[in-house]
Length: 298
Image (cartoon, rainbow, N blue to C red; front, side, top):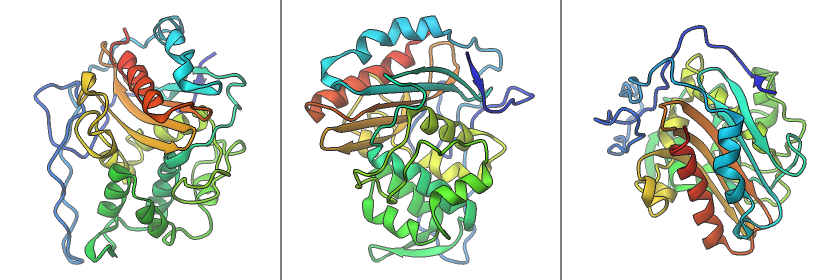
C-alpha cells in the first residue's frame, strides 16, 4: 500500500537553489554562493527542474522491484540493507524494502545532518551571519557547505543554533514525521548510537522538497551532485548530474539519500541504507548503481 504524506493540489515543480540547466531533467551544479556580509540579503535562488511535466507517470512497485531487487541483494552491501522511495509531487512512499520494513532501524551516519539542518532552519533566520573556520558566512551558506562536504565541524556548529534537540524541533513542526524509530544522538552522524529507518529518512526528504516549505532551500542546494560536487564529485560518473544526495559513511556503514529524476521525468526521493558493509569502496559503487537504476526507471 502507498502511504500518503501530503497531497499537492496542483502539479508543482521542485525548486533547487542551483543554476538553470539546458537539460530540464538534470540536477546540475552551480558556482559557489558568494560569502555574505551581515547586511547583505540572501540572493534569490535560480530555478531548475521547472520544466518537469505535471502528468509524468508514477513508477509502479513492480517496476521498482524489477530494477532493484538484484542490486539490493548484492553481497557488496552486506546482510542488512534497506531502501525507501517516495514521490515528491504527491508525497507518497511508493516503495520500501528491508528485513523488517518499515520499522527496520539502521545506523544513518552523516545522513543525520539532514535532520540537524532542518531543525536549524525551522528555528533561525538563514541570514544570520556566522564565523566558521575563520570565514564569515550566512547560516544558509554554512548549511550548504556542511552538507556538500559532509563537514562534521559544521554540523556541530549548526547544532548550537537548535533550542533543545533536533528531534523535538522536527516533531513540534511536523507531527506526521514519525521519529519513534529514530535516535538522533549527535548532529554529525559520527555516533554509532544514531538510528533511523529508510522510510523516516524519505519522509523527511519529502518534507524538505515540499514547495510549502521554502525555508529548506539551503538543504536542497547543499546536497552533493553525482559526479560533480562535494562528496559525490568522484562518484556515479555514469549518471553525472542526474541525482543529488547526502552521503553517509562509517566503518561498515554506507548510506545514500536524496533526489533523482527518473526516465519519465518523475521526481523521486530515495534513501538506501546498509550497515553491515564488508568494504566501503564496493558498497559505495553499489549504492551509486542503485541511484543510477532509479535514473533509468520507467
